[in-house]
Image 1 (cartoon, rainbow, N blue to C red):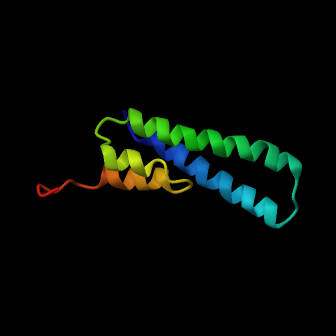
Image 2 (image 1 turned 180 degrees about the vertical axis):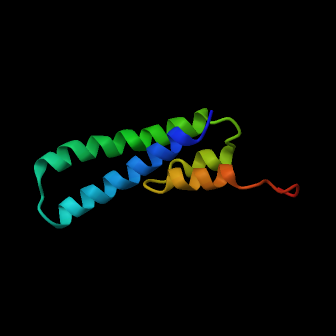
Length: 87
């Protein structure tokens, strides 16, 4: 499995939160909140599920997936990092 779906879910999670916070700080449009909240929650759950489905994701990567907003990017860094023999 490639990391492309995880990369897309991580982006959707971060972008939706930025959109929700911008809405909160400015105009408070209910449609943005109504749509953005579930998108953010689903993207967060998708990051966790995709991390567990990713072959080679160890315990460290799986724990990082639970960090809100940046967990997906932390997992991508962890999976892409070369493993040294001493680890």
